[in-house]
Image (cartoon, rainbow, N blue to C red):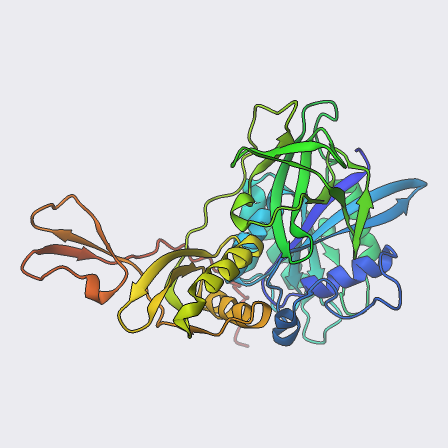
Length: 422
Protein backbone atom coordinates (compact mmCIF):
# COMPACT_ATOMS: atom_id res chain seq x y z
CA UNK A 1 0.00 0.00 0.00
CA UNK A 2 2.93 2.37 0.64
CA UNK A 3 3.73 2.30 -3.11
CA UNK A 4 0.24 3.30 -4.31
CA UNK A 5 -0.37 6.89 -5.45
CA UNK A 6 -3.91 8.07 -6.24
CA UNK A 7 -4.04 11.45 -7.99
CA UNK A 8 -6.21 13.45 -10.38
CA UNK A 9 -5.50 16.19 -12.91
CA UNK A 10 -7.45 19.43 -12.44
CA UNK A 11 -7.36 22.63 -14.51
CA UNK A 12 -9.36 25.19 -16.43
CA UNK A 13 -10.71 24.08 -19.82
CA UNK A 14 -8.10 23.89 -22.62
CA UNK A 15 -5.06 24.08 -20.33
CA UNK A 16 -3.76 20.73 -21.61
CA UNK A 17 -4.90 18.12 -19.06
CA UNK A 18 -5.73 15.33 -21.52
CA UNK A 19 -2.55 15.90 -23.58
CA UNK A 20 -0.43 15.78 -20.43
CA UNK A 21 -2.25 12.60 -19.37
CA UNK A 22 -1.25 11.09 -22.75
CA UNK A 23 2.41 11.93 -22.04
CA UNK A 24 2.22 10.37 -18.54
CA UNK A 25 0.88 7.16 -20.10
CA UNK A 26 3.69 7.24 -22.69
CA UNK A 27 6.39 7.87 -20.08
CA UNK A 28 5.29 5.00 -17.82
CA UNK A 29 4.92 2.60 -20.76
CA UNK A 30 1.21 2.09 -20.03
CA UNK A 31 0.27 2.14 -23.73
CA UNK A 32 1.84 0.48 -26.73
CA UNK A 33 2.74 2.32 -29.95
CA UNK A 34 -0.27 0.68 -31.56
CA UNK A 35 -2.66 1.98 -28.88
CA UNK A 36 -1.33 5.56 -28.89
CA UNK A 37 -3.62 8.36 -30.05
CA UNK A 38 -4.33 11.95 -29.03
CA UNK A 39 -6.80 12.41 -26.16
CA UNK A 40 -6.45 8.69 -25.39
CA UNK A 41 -8.59 8.82 -22.23
CA UNK A 42 -11.38 10.79 -23.95
CA UNK A 43 -13.23 7.74 -25.21
CA UNK A 44 -16.52 9.37 -26.29
CA UNK A 45 -17.00 10.65 -29.87
CA UNK A 46 -18.44 13.87 -28.43
CA UNK A 47 -15.26 14.53 -26.46
CA UNK A 48 -13.08 14.11 -29.54
CA UNK A 49 -15.32 16.21 -31.78
CA UNK A 50 -15.49 19.13 -29.35
CA UNK A 51 -11.97 18.79 -27.98
CA UNK A 52 -13.19 18.78 -24.36
CA UNK A 53 -13.31 16.23 -21.55
CA UNK A 54 -16.88 15.44 -20.49
CA UNK A 55 -16.33 12.39 -18.28
CA UNK A 56 -13.58 11.77 -15.74
CA UNK A 57 -11.46 8.75 -16.73
CA UNK A 58 -9.53 6.49 -14.36
CA UNK A 59 -6.47 4.51 -15.47
CA UNK A 60 -3.73 2.65 -13.60
CA UNK A 61 -0.04 2.98 -14.47
CA UNK A 62 2.84 0.79 -13.28
CA UNK A 63 6.19 2.50 -12.81
CA UNK A 64 9.54 1.42 -11.37
CA UNK A 65 11.46 4.12 -9.49
CA UNK A 66 14.81 3.51 -7.74
CA UNK A 67 14.24 -0.25 -7.79
CA UNK A 68 10.72 -0.10 -6.31
CA UNK A 69 7.49 -0.79 -8.18
CA UNK A 70 4.79 1.86 -7.86
CA UNK A 71 1.09 1.82 -8.80
CA UNK A 72 -0.07 5.22 -10.02
CA UNK A 73 -3.86 5.61 -10.28
CA UNK A 74 -4.63 8.62 -12.47
CA UNK A 75 -8.04 10.25 -12.91
CA UNK A 76 -8.27 12.80 -15.75
CA UNK A 77 -11.09 15.28 -15.08
CA UNK A 78 -13.11 17.79 -17.16
CA UNK A 79 -12.22 21.49 -17.08
CA UNK A 80 -15.58 23.04 -18.01
CA UNK A 81 -17.69 24.35 -15.09
CA UNK A 82 -20.73 22.37 -16.32
CA UNK A 83 -18.91 19.13 -15.46
CA UNK A 84 -17.48 20.20 -12.10
CA UNK A 85 -19.43 17.41 -10.35
CA UNK A 86 -17.17 14.93 -12.16
CA UNK A 87 -14.20 16.73 -10.59
CA UNK A 88 -15.65 16.53 -7.05
CA UNK A 89 -16.19 12.77 -7.45
CA UNK A 90 -12.63 12.25 -8.70
CA UNK A 91 -11.15 14.30 -5.87
CA UNK A 92 -12.98 12.15 -3.29
CA UNK A 93 -11.04 9.10 -4.53
CA UNK A 94 -7.55 10.71 -4.45
CA UNK A 95 -4.80 11.90 -2.10
CA UNK A 96 -3.15 14.31 -4.53
CA UNK A 97 -3.88 16.55 -7.51
CA UNK A 98 -1.85 17.93 -10.39
CA UNK A 99 -2.96 21.55 -10.80
CA UNK A 100 -2.27 22.40 -14.46
CA UNK A 101 -1.89 26.06 -15.48
CA UNK A 102 -1.39 27.22 -19.08
CA UNK A 103 1.82 29.29 -19.33
CA UNK A 104 0.17 31.51 -21.96
CA UNK A 105 -3.31 31.95 -20.41
CA UNK A 106 -2.31 31.98 -16.71
CA UNK A 107 -4.77 31.25 -13.87
CA UNK A 108 -8.45 31.19 -14.87
CA UNK A 109 -11.81 30.62 -13.20
CA UNK A 110 -11.90 26.81 -13.03
CA UNK A 111 -8.24 26.72 -11.94
CA UNK A 112 -9.29 28.43 -8.72
CA UNK A 113 -12.64 26.64 -8.37
CA UNK A 114 -11.10 23.17 -8.75
CA UNK A 115 -8.19 24.12 -6.48
CA UNK A 116 -10.61 25.04 -3.69
CA UNK A 117 -12.40 21.69 -4.18
CA UNK A 118 -9.09 19.88 -3.80
CA UNK A 119 -8.04 21.89 -0.73
CA UNK A 120 -11.38 21.19 0.97
CA UNK A 121 -10.56 17.48 0.63
CA UNK A 122 -7.01 17.95 2.01
CA UNK A 123 -5.31 16.88 -1.21
CA UNK A 124 -1.60 17.44 -1.83
CA UNK A 125 -1.37 19.98 -4.66
CA UNK A 126 1.42 19.70 -7.24
CA UNK A 127 1.45 22.83 -9.45
CA UNK A 128 2.42 22.24 -13.09
CA UNK A 129 3.08 25.03 -15.58
CA UNK A 130 2.07 23.55 -18.94
CA UNK A 131 2.70 24.70 -22.54
CA UNK A 132 6.01 26.39 -21.69
CA UNK A 133 7.14 25.69 -25.29
CA UNK A 134 4.60 28.13 -26.79
CA UNK A 135 6.00 31.39 -28.23
CA UNK A 136 3.32 33.31 -26.25
CA UNK A 137 4.23 31.60 -22.96
CA UNK A 138 5.19 33.79 -20.02
CA UNK A 139 6.55 31.25 -17.49
CA UNK A 140 8.14 33.70 -15.03
CA UNK A 141 5.02 35.84 -14.60
CA UNK A 142 2.61 32.88 -14.44
CA UNK A 143 4.89 31.11 -11.93
CA UNK A 144 4.60 34.20 -9.71
CA UNK A 145 0.79 34.00 -10.05
CA UNK A 146 0.83 30.33 -8.97
CA UNK A 147 3.09 31.14 -6.01
CA UNK A 148 0.69 33.93 -4.95
CA UNK A 149 -2.28 31.57 -5.27
CA UNK A 150 -0.83 28.53 -3.50
CA UNK A 151 1.74 30.07 -1.20
CA UNK A 152 4.35 27.59 -2.47
CA UNK A 153 7.97 28.20 -3.47
CA UNK A 154 8.79 28.97 -7.14
CA UNK A 155 11.00 25.85 -7.41
CA UNK A 156 7.97 23.67 -6.50
CA UNK A 157 6.22 24.70 -9.73
CA UNK A 158 7.08 22.09 -12.40
CA UNK A 159 7.59 23.42 -15.94
CA UNK A 160 6.27 21.02 -18.58
CA UNK A 161 4.88 20.64 -22.08
CA UNK A 162 2.17 18.12 -22.88
CA UNK A 163 2.96 18.51 -26.57
CA UNK A 164 6.69 17.73 -26.48
CA UNK A 165 6.83 15.66 -23.26
CA UNK A 166 9.23 18.11 -21.58
CA UNK A 167 9.14 17.86 -17.75
CA UNK A 168 6.99 14.69 -17.59
CA UNK A 169 9.73 12.82 -15.68
CA UNK A 170 9.75 15.59 -13.05
CA UNK A 171 5.97 15.28 -12.69
CA UNK A 172 6.20 11.51 -12.08
CA UNK A 173 9.00 12.12 -9.56
CA UNK A 174 6.86 14.72 -7.75
CA UNK A 175 3.85 12.38 -7.64
CA UNK A 176 5.95 9.64 -6.01
CA UNK A 177 7.70 12.01 -3.58
CA UNK A 178 4.90 14.41 -2.65
CA UNK A 179 1.55 12.60 -2.96
CA UNK A 180 0.95 10.64 0.28
CA UNK A 181 0.30 6.91 0.14
CA UNK A 182 -3.30 5.93 0.92
CA UNK A 183 -4.23 5.33 4.54
CA UNK A 184 -6.40 2.43 5.57
CA UNK A 185 -6.53 -0.85 7.47
CA UNK A 186 -6.16 -3.95 5.25
CA UNK A 187 -7.55 -6.13 8.08
CA UNK A 188 -10.66 -4.02 8.72
CA UNK A 189 -14.08 -4.87 7.21
CA UNK A 190 -14.43 -3.92 3.54
CA UNK A 191 -15.22 -0.24 2.98
CA UNK A 192 -15.15 1.07 -0.60
CA UNK A 193 -16.41 4.31 -2.16
CA UNK A 194 -18.30 4.19 -5.48
CA UNK A 195 -17.09 7.16 -7.53
CA UNK A 196 -18.48 6.23 -10.95
CA UNK A 197 -20.44 3.58 -12.84
CA UNK A 198 -21.31 2.74 -16.43
CA UNK A 199 -23.97 0.57 -18.05
CA UNK A 200 -22.82 -2.35 -20.19
CA UNK A 201 -25.63 -3.96 -22.18
CA UNK A 202 -23.95 -7.41 -21.97
CA UNK A 203 -22.56 -7.48 -18.43
CA UNK A 204 -24.87 -5.13 -16.53
CA UNK A 205 -23.64 -2.21 -14.46
CA UNK A 206 -19.87 -1.80 -14.03
CA UNK A 207 -19.12 -0.04 -10.74
CA UNK A 208 -15.86 1.90 -10.24
CA UNK A 209 -14.66 2.13 -6.64
CA UNK A 210 -11.79 3.17 -4.38
CA UNK A 211 -11.10 0.89 -1.39
CA UNK A 212 -10.63 2.73 1.92
CA UNK A 213 -10.33 -0.33 4.20
CA UNK A 214 -10.21 -4.10 3.73
CA UNK A 215 -10.21 -5.84 0.35
CA UNK A 216 -12.73 -7.11 -2.18
CA UNK A 217 -12.38 -10.63 -3.61
CA UNK A 218 -13.86 -12.34 -6.61
CA UNK A 219 -16.95 -14.35 -5.55
CA UNK A 220 -17.31 -12.41 -2.28
CA UNK A 221 -20.84 -11.54 -1.11
CA UNK A 222 -20.98 -7.75 -0.84
CA UNK A 223 -23.59 -5.20 0.21
CA UNK A 224 -24.40 -1.69 -1.08
CA UNK A 225 -25.16 0.31 2.07
CA UNK A 226 -27.47 2.93 0.51
CA UNK A 227 -29.92 0.32 -0.78
CA UNK A 228 -29.05 -2.60 1.60
CA UNK A 229 -29.02 -4.91 -1.41
CA UNK A 230 -26.57 -7.84 -1.47
CA UNK A 231 -24.78 -9.27 -4.51
CA UNK A 232 -21.93 -11.57 -5.47
CA UNK A 233 -18.77 -9.98 -6.87
CA UNK A 234 -18.76 -11.88 -10.16
CA UNK A 235 -15.67 -10.03 -11.40
CA UNK A 236 -13.25 -7.54 -9.85
CA UNK A 237 -10.15 -5.94 -11.31
CA UNK A 238 -8.15 -2.80 -11.95
CA UNK A 239 -8.61 -0.08 -14.56
CA UNK A 240 -5.79 0.00 -17.08
CA UNK A 241 -6.42 0.97 -20.70
CA UNK A 242 -8.48 -2.22 -20.75
CA UNK A 243 -9.95 -3.78 -17.62
CA UNK A 244 -7.57 -6.25 -15.94
CA UNK A 245 -9.28 -9.10 -14.04
CA UNK A 246 -7.86 -9.77 -10.56
CA UNK A 247 -8.66 -12.26 -7.80
CA UNK A 248 -8.80 -9.37 -5.30
CA UNK A 249 -8.37 -5.59 -5.06
CA UNK A 250 -6.76 -4.38 -1.83
CA UNK A 251 -6.80 -1.32 0.44
CA UNK A 252 -5.95 1.99 -1.21
CA UNK A 253 -6.40 0.75 -4.77
CA UNK A 254 -8.91 1.75 -7.44
CA UNK A 255 -10.83 -0.87 -9.39
CA UNK A 256 -14.05 -2.03 -11.00
CA UNK A 257 -16.77 -4.45 -9.90
CA UNK A 258 -19.31 -6.43 -11.94
CA UNK A 259 -22.22 -8.03 -10.08
CA UNK A 260 -24.71 -8.58 -12.91
CA UNK A 261 -26.97 -5.72 -11.75
CA UNK A 262 -29.28 -4.68 -14.58
CA UNK A 263 -31.43 -2.05 -12.83
CA UNK A 264 -29.87 1.42 -12.74
CA UNK A 265 -31.62 2.44 -9.49
CA UNK A 266 -29.71 -0.20 -7.52
CA UNK A 267 -26.35 1.60 -7.88
CA UNK A 268 -25.81 5.07 -6.41
CA UNK A 269 -22.64 7.07 -6.96
CA UNK A 270 -21.21 8.02 -3.55
CA UNK A 271 -22.49 4.79 -1.94
CA UNK A 272 -20.35 2.54 0.28
CA UNK A 273 -19.63 -1.11 -0.61
CA UNK A 274 -19.03 -3.47 2.31
CA UNK A 275 -18.81 -7.19 3.09
CA UNK A 276 -22.26 -8.75 3.62
CA UNK A 277 -20.99 -11.18 6.29
CA UNK A 278 -18.79 -8.69 8.18
CA UNK A 279 -20.13 -5.22 7.32
CA UNK A 280 -18.49 -1.95 8.29
CA UNK A 281 -20.39 0.36 10.63
CA UNK A 282 -19.27 3.59 8.96
CA UNK A 283 -20.63 4.96 5.69
CA UNK A 284 -18.00 6.92 3.74
CA UNK A 285 -18.81 10.57 3.24
CA UNK A 286 -19.31 10.77 -0.49
CA UNK A 287 -19.66 14.09 -2.28
CA UNK A 288 -21.99 17.05 -2.04
CA UNK A 289 -25.49 16.69 -3.48
CA UNK A 290 -25.67 18.10 -6.98
CA UNK A 291 -27.35 21.51 -7.37
CA UNK A 292 -28.89 21.95 -10.84
CA UNK A 293 -28.65 25.48 -12.27
CA UNK A 294 -30.70 25.15 -15.47
CA UNK A 295 -33.98 23.29 -15.96
CA UNK A 296 -35.66 22.10 -19.14
CA UNK A 297 -38.24 19.55 -20.21
CA UNK A 298 -37.19 16.55 -22.30
CA UNK A 299 -39.98 14.76 -24.19
CA UNK A 300 -39.95 11.85 -26.65
CA UNK A 301 -40.97 12.73 -30.21
CA UNK A 302 -43.29 9.71 -30.15
CA UNK A 303 -45.31 9.54 -26.90
CA UNK A 304 -45.13 5.72 -27.03
CA UNK A 305 -41.37 5.98 -26.35
CA UNK A 306 -41.91 7.48 -22.87
CA UNK A 307 -40.89 4.33 -20.94
CA UNK A 308 -37.91 3.77 -23.22
CA UNK A 309 -36.81 7.37 -22.57
CA UNK A 310 -37.08 6.73 -18.81
CA UNK A 311 -34.80 3.66 -19.07
CA UNK A 312 -32.34 5.58 -21.23
CA UNK A 313 -32.15 8.47 -18.76
CA UNK A 314 -31.68 6.10 -15.82
CA UNK A 315 -28.74 4.46 -17.62
CA UNK A 316 -27.32 7.87 -18.53
CA UNK A 317 -27.66 9.01 -14.90
CA UNK A 318 -25.42 6.07 -13.91
CA UNK A 319 -22.63 7.58 -15.97
CA UNK A 320 -23.49 11.22 -15.17
CA UNK A 321 -24.74 11.55 -11.60
CA UNK A 322 -25.19 15.33 -11.99
CA UNK A 323 -28.26 14.72 -14.20
CA UNK A 324 -31.48 15.17 -12.19
CA UNK A 325 -34.90 14.37 -13.64
CA UNK A 326 -38.52 13.93 -12.56
CA UNK A 327 -41.67 13.02 -14.55
CA UNK A 328 -43.88 15.85 -15.84
CA UNK A 329 -46.60 16.26 -18.46
CA UNK A 330 -47.43 18.95 -20.97
CA UNK A 331 -50.72 19.61 -22.78
CA UNK A 332 -48.81 20.04 -26.05
CA UNK A 333 -46.00 17.47 -25.72
CA UNK A 334 -47.55 14.75 -23.55
CA UNK A 335 -45.50 12.85 -20.95
CA UNK A 336 -41.83 13.62 -20.44
CA UNK A 337 -39.28 14.64 -17.81
CA UNK A 338 -38.26 17.89 -16.19
CA UNK A 339 -34.47 17.72 -16.02
CA UNK A 340 -31.94 19.71 -14.01
CA UNK A 341 -28.54 20.47 -15.53
CA UNK A 342 -25.39 22.20 -14.30
CA UNK A 343 -25.40 24.57 -17.29
CA UNK A 344 -26.31 25.07 -20.93
CA UNK A 345 -23.41 22.96 -22.27
CA UNK A 346 -24.37 20.14 -19.91
CA UNK A 347 -27.95 20.25 -21.27
CA UNK A 348 -26.68 20.15 -24.85
CA UNK A 349 -24.36 17.20 -24.14
CA UNK A 350 -27.13 15.20 -22.42
CA UNK A 351 -29.42 15.69 -25.42
CA UNK A 352 -26.63 14.60 -27.79
CA UNK A 353 -25.81 11.53 -25.70
CA UNK A 354 -29.47 10.46 -25.60
CA UNK A 355 -29.59 10.59 -29.39
CA UNK A 356 -26.19 8.93 -30.03
CA UNK A 357 -25.91 6.33 -27.27
CA UNK A 358 -29.57 5.37 -26.84
CA UNK A 359 -31.03 6.26 -30.25
CA UNK A 360 -33.66 8.50 -28.59
CA UNK A 361 -34.93 11.46 -30.63
CA UNK A 362 -36.17 14.00 -28.10
CA UNK A 363 -37.72 17.47 -27.89
CA UNK A 364 -36.10 19.85 -25.40
CA UNK A 365 -38.10 22.81 -24.11
CA UNK A 366 -36.68 26.32 -23.58
CA UNK A 367 -34.41 26.19 -20.49
CA UNK A 368 -35.50 28.13 -17.41
CA UNK A 369 -35.16 28.19 -13.62
CA UNK A 370 -37.62 27.50 -10.79
CA UNK A 371 -39.44 30.37 -9.04
CA UNK A 372 -40.98 30.40 -5.55
CA UNK A 373 -44.52 31.77 -5.18
CA UNK A 374 -46.33 32.67 -1.94
CA UNK A 375 -50.10 33.09 -1.66
CA UNK A 376 -51.98 35.48 0.65
CA UNK A 377 -53.84 32.55 2.22
CA UNK A 378 -50.64 30.68 3.23
CA UNK A 379 -47.77 33.22 3.17
CA UNK A 380 -45.34 30.62 4.65
CA UNK A 381 -46.09 27.88 2.11
CA UNK A 382 -43.71 27.75 -0.87
CA UNK A 383 -45.14 26.91 -4.27
CA UNK A 384 -42.35 25.85 -6.65
CA UNK A 385 -43.10 27.09 -10.16
CA UNK A 386 -41.41 25.33 -13.05
CA UNK A 387 -43.76 26.69 -15.69
CA UNK A 388 -45.58 30.03 -16.12
CA UNK A 389 -48.88 28.13 -16.37
CA UNK A 390 -48.42 27.02 -12.73
CA UNK A 391 -48.55 30.64 -11.49
CA UNK A 392 -51.51 31.16 -9.06
CA UNK A 393 -54.21 33.71 -9.79
CA UNK A 394 -52.71 37.23 -9.33
CA UNK A 395 -55.48 38.14 -6.86
CA UNK A 396 -54.30 35.33 -4.54
CA UNK A 397 -50.59 36.00 -5.03
CA UNK A 398 -48.60 37.55 -2.19
CA UNK A 399 -45.13 37.60 -3.80
CA UNK A 400 -42.83 35.75 -6.19
CA UNK A 401 -39.13 35.08 -5.54
CA UNK A 402 -36.61 34.36 -8.28
CA UNK A 403 -33.24 32.65 -7.71
CA UNK A 404 -30.02 34.59 -7.46
CA UNK A 405 -26.42 33.58 -6.91
CA UNK A 406 -23.81 34.57 -4.37
CA UNK A 407 -20.58 34.95 -6.34
CA UNK A 408 -16.97 35.66 -5.51
CA UNK A 409 -14.96 37.53 -8.13
CA UNK A 410 -11.22 36.97 -7.92
CA UNK A 411 -8.92 39.03 -10.12
CA UNK A 412 -5.16 39.07 -10.50
CA UNK A 413 -3.95 42.62 -11.01
CA UNK A 414 -0.42 43.29 -12.23
CA UNK A 415 0.85 46.72 -11.31
CA UNK A 416 3.79 47.69 -13.47
CA UNK A 417 6.30 50.39 -12.68
CA UNK A 418 5.20 53.74 -14.20
CA UNK A 419 7.55 55.04 -16.85
CA UNK A 420 9.52 58.00 -15.63
CA UNK A 421 9.72 61.11 -17.84
CA UNK A 422 13.24 62.11 -18.88
